Image (cartoon, one colour):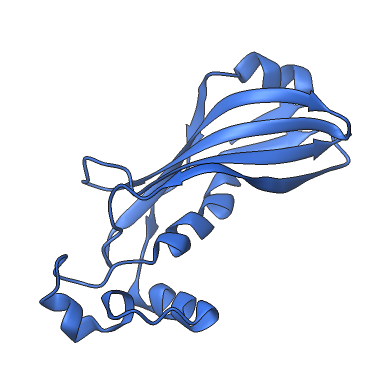
Length: 150
C-alpha cells in the first residue's frame, strides 16, 4: 500500500508505476451476479454449457464487470490523504484487449499519469492495467480521473 499525504507527494510520483493489487479469482457466481445487477444476460457470460463450445471455451466476464473491479483493486494499491474528499471524476479512455475467462485470476497495476490543479483542488489521472494471469495482453487498460477536493 502506497500512501500519499497531499499533492506534493503525488507530484513526486507522476510518471511512475505505484503498485499492484493482489490477485482476484473471477468465478461464475460473480459474473452471474453482475448479469443480474445489469440485466446483461448475453450467453457468452451466463450460459456455461453453450460457452464451452464458443470462441473462448468457457464463459467470460463482462467488460464492464472487469472495469468495475478497478476501484476495489486500486484501494489495495494506494491511498491519498490531506484532502477533504476524493471522488471518481470519470474516464478518458477504456480498452478491453483480452477477455477475462471464468476461473482466471486478475490483478490491477497503477501508473500515476498526471496531477493538475483545478478550482476544487486537484485532478489525478491514473492508468489502470488489469492483467489476467498467464495472458500476454491486459484485460483492461483505462485512464481514470479522480477529483481530490481540498
